[in-house]
Amino acid sequence: MGEQLDPAPAITIGPGEAAVYQAICGDPLAISLSRPMAEAITGQPGSVVNPALVLQVAIGQSTVATRKVVANLFYRGVRQLHTVRVGDTLTTVVTVRGLREASARPDRPPRGLVLLGIQTHDDQGRLVLDFERCALVRCRSDASTGHADHLGGAPEELDMVPVVEAVPSDWDLSPLGGPQEWPIGETRRDPLRDTVTDAPALVRLTQNLAPPHRDASLGQGGKRLVYGGHTVGLAQAGLVRLLPTAATVVGWHLCDHTGPVFEDDVVEVSATLDAIHQVPNGRLLAFTVTVQAERNGAEPVPVLDWRPIVLAP
Image (cartoon, rainbow, N blue to C red):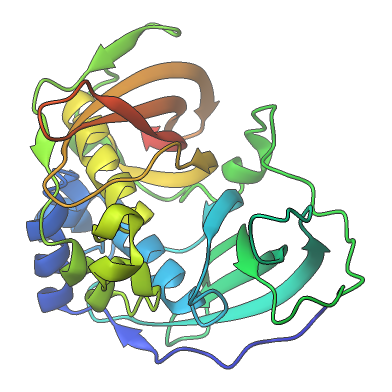
């Protein structure tokens, strides 16, 4: 408890890194595609890094704690607190905030849960990302660890207040156009399904150290497992196609990987608007985004339940 792990290498997100990410996920987020648009909205010079790429880097750097992870159980408190620009260098600190043994079963080795606090700073020392994730990992031995911390879980009730504090209040969203009509409770499906490709490239780009994402022999059924953030990246791309006035993703309410994804799966994205919260320069829109994956001609299966909070006019 309280241990701060040795950090992963710092990563500079230059135009090359941004271009590779764009080639993998194809996100049409205007602020990360156009430098003039980024400057008009933020009032500052330079291109803006896609917020999903910032999170991918932080997760990849946090795998110093979870190289042989069994599963990620939940994310919580995800907030992007500062705009990252192309050329910024990110460093992530991972701290152990809780440990608990998992229930023992005779058909598997002992496992346990670790709650990780993850904070990412830029090269000016500013905190740009702050969140927790809970990972299921293998125990070092069969002996009891004695750890029984209460780790909580993903929050069931949507709370906009912590996210409001992360809204860039000096942004001018008028270049994105007027408010887009989307009734609360309405579900929309992105008609552009997408094929999952270049999965190892995203893993290498973000320094993700989880072996099942690189080695097919360690995946399910001898297939290389696609990193969960890759699915989130495709989900964000689908959401932005449905909401082209999106300025940025400010935070996540929760994220649950409901099934595995493999390379060459064809994914389909749907989004439901759950809530709207007015802020001085626009609106926070809370969505439930679901992703289904089709493989080998079989019926699509659910693979992602993601609850982002988006800043838009």
